[in-house]
Image 1 (tube, rainbow, N blue to C red):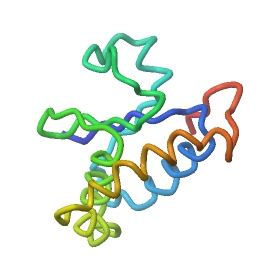
Image 2: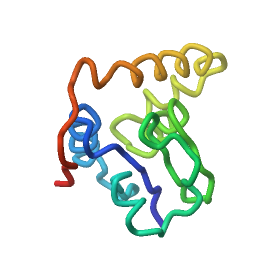
Image 3: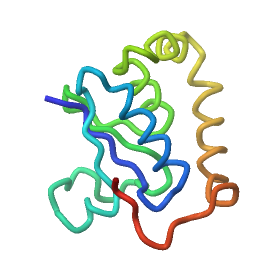
Image 4: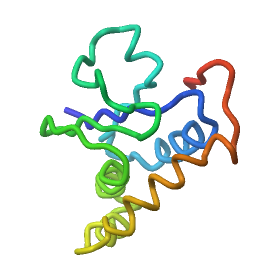
Length: 122
């Protein structure tokens, strides 16, 4: 079983972060699914009503839904190369800083990086 990470395939920043993280998924822990595909397929009803275009989401191997900073933390812990960073993000109080910082960055990413007209999946 893999973690399933839902990303915005029309966000250039999200697309390139996904491509980079895929190269470090040496153990095949993560399946990447474009948010744009979830709406068409109907395979992910647990995402309905969630702000999937505003925050990255993950369905963990354990069946838990995470979003935003928590997803980033879990991603880092799942990738051996970034595990130490994931541990730092897990320290007490890290989410008090990390969650607002994540939301601020997410709110401004389209201003800084633009938006693709069509989703990119490769």
